[in-house]
Amino acid sequence: MPREELQNLALRRQLFYPTAEIYANAPAGFWEFGPIGVRIRNNIIAFWRKELVERERLLEIHGSVILPRAVFEASGHLKSFNDPIVQCKKCHALFRADKLIEEKTGMHVPESMSIEEIDKLIAKHNIKCPKCRGALSNVRLFNMMMRVLIGATQNQECFLRPETCQNIFLDFLRLYKASRQGLPLGIAQAGSSFRNEIAPKQTLLRERELGQMEIEIFFNPDKINDVEHFDEVADYKLMLQRLNREGIEEISCEQAVKQNIVSGKLIAYWLARLQQFYEKCGIAKQKMRFRELDAEERAFYAKETWDFEVLTDLGWIELVACNYRTDYDLKGHSLGSKKDLSVKEDNKAFIPHVFELSAGIDRTFYVVLDQAIRKEKRGKEERLYLDLPVQLAPYLVAVFPLVSKDGLPEKAHEVFTLLEDYEFFCIYDEKGSIGRRYARVDEIGVPYAITIDYDTMKDDTVTIRERNTMKQKRVAIESLPELLWKLSVGKLSFQNI
Image (cartoon, rainbow, N blue to C red; front, top):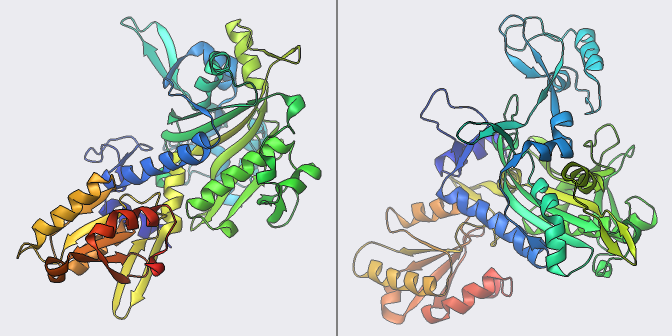
């Protein structure tokens, strides 16, 4: 589905739209989520929490978005969290140098490439300013951290966090001692991070304020293969795009470990759980991959990286960075804070290693919509709908009176109240024709619609309609709570009603 179709739907149905859009000088890279968008976004976070945090018995925190300078000195961000930029000598526009080269030549510029090497590529390919064709300056590094000055005298330098994981590393020792769980210990957090992107574009895919769902697994590196529930995923096949290999290979977790494709069972286990989560989010297995990154592409702290990507209308989009960060972070914060962050197991003290699954909330939101949007013709009519999984839909069910007279709205409100009492997420609408109301809820992905008609007034039955097939069944009002519950948890299919 073309991205214009998705963006038009997003604006028409208030899924997402630019921040401060009524002001001409509002900065790019910031986005608002409207009433329907925020429900879908919140459902994605809630589903991640249910599937990966609660089921895996991880600890969850909510950390501050502002952290002191010393944190980012220890983490390496003030030194290494940079993008290469160039400026037009004529119109003074700024651009990311690596992206200019990629757009002009199609070649990939790795993170580790020096600014001198990038300068040579710009000269070799005679790359000019895309806006005015002016000559470009030499490349320089631009740090993407957002600085904040704290206090009445603004004498304390802090920064908005560029990733949610730093809070987790800072809190590790406290949580490890209090939880009494031992290693491996998983800690999670969902929240905002901030990056001073040079040229935010492609809506939610490159933001200055971005949502992240972060999981950090702390473990003993000597016990990377001691994974309690590994047998549950041993035969499950990962979609792997390995270095220097053509195409995507389906490789079981067991084989990935035995062939040393991953560093150990713990890595394979969490890659499997993550892939299963996104399958449940409605993404086809054939459109996903874990792409292995080489040393030049990996982040400065990573020993092993698998980027989880999904194929969309825009190409492959990275949703999750899966990094084996070793002991880099805890060791850095131990040195920076002068606090001992080691733990003791089997009479041996060591700094735990970390495996990270850092998922973009807004990128996931965008890709879930991209994969769910459907356009089809039914006779002369064309309809657009979101084929969202039940757990991500903004509402489970819509309630409509067939017409807004003859007591039907009052009866519809009774049904609506009944379902609300059972804590189903419902939406009510009585304006416009029934066909238009169906179309409105189809567009935002509501799986089921209940219509109260004249027969309802006689026998207390209603029609229930399925979004995708548009088929309808007649059921008793008193059966609705149990019926909707079974539909919502997958214990009953619509065709078997």
